[in-house]
Image (tube, rainbow over all chains, first blue to last red; front, side, top):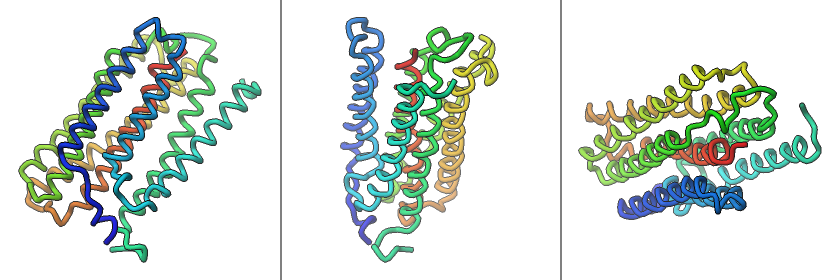
Length: 99
Length: 188
C-alpha cells in the first residue's frame, strides 16, 4: 500500500533534524535576550518558529515522504485556521472591534 | 484496512483529526492574541512569564519528539529492545513537560494570576491548559504502547499503531512551537 511503502528517514536523519531544531530554539531564545535584535524581534521569531514547524511536519510527521493526500488533509485546515486567525486579528486589531 | 486510494484508513482518519485540531488551537491562539495587552490589571505577561524555565521545557518536548521517531524506527525494523527504551523516554519526557507546567501554573496562582484575574490569565490558562491536556493524553497513550511492548504484544506488525501515536505526539510538539513563540517570546 502506498503510505506504508514510503521510506521513512533513517535514525541519522532524525538526529540531524533534532540538532537543527535545538540550534533554532537556542537562536530563538538568544535573539529574545539580545537588545540589538529587538527592532526585528517579531519577524525573526515568526520566521524561526515557522521553520521549526515545517521541519517537524516534513521529517518527523513524514509529510515529505508520505502520500500527498495527507498533506492536503493537514494543509487545508491549517490554511483555514491561519485565515481565521488573520481575519480575527484584523477585525479586533486593525478595525478595533471588541473590548 | 486500506482506502480505495491505497492509504491506511486509520492514518487518513488521524490526519483529518489533526486538521480539526489545527482549527481548535488556531481559535485559542487567536483569542489569546486578540486580548493580548488588554488586561485592566496585573499580573501581565512581562511580569510573570519565566522564559528560561519554559525554554528548558521546550527543549524537553523537542527531545521527546526525537525519541518518538527513534521509537518508530526501532519498531519498524523489529528492534523491540530499543523501541521500549525510546517509548519510555517519550513517556518520561512528556511527564517532565507536564511537571514544568504544573510548577508554572502553581507559581502563577501564588503570584495572583488565575483564570478570573484578567484577560491574560483567562486566555493563557485556557490555551496552555488545553495544550497540557493534550500532552497528558499523549503520555497515557504512549505509556500503553510501552506496556504492550513490555508484554511482547507490540511488534513490527504494529508499526502503524506507533506511527499514529507519533503523529499525535509531533502535532502536540508543533503546537507548542507556535505557543512558545506567540505567548512567551512575543509577549506584550
